[in-house]
Length: 115
Image (tube, rainbow, N blue to C red; front, top):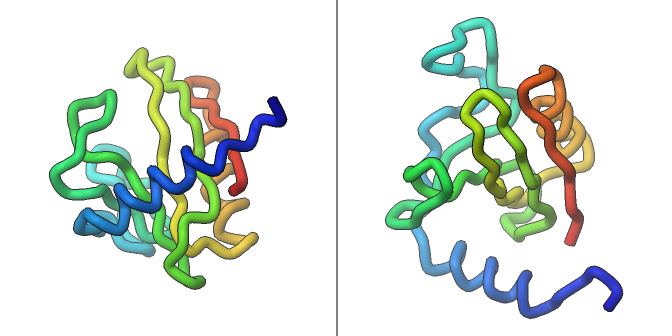
């Protein structure tokens, strides 16, 4: 097993392609509970989906071609949960910003898995 599963990525493609993307935190906006945190990439969710936190599956939508290019696997020690976040059309610079966002505090850590 090499760690790459084409069927996993195809399933994500199907999920994203059959879902409405809602951007509720556009680039440049502040986090609703942490006003000092400014989103550097559009952030939202897939409508009518569910993630570990009970909300829709989170997505980061970059400025590139609108294809899934990576996921972030997150562990949040404050919320005591874990989840994935789908990266769609993110440039290398945007991926780096997203990676840093999920690793800048002691309470949240994440790994970036590229397609």
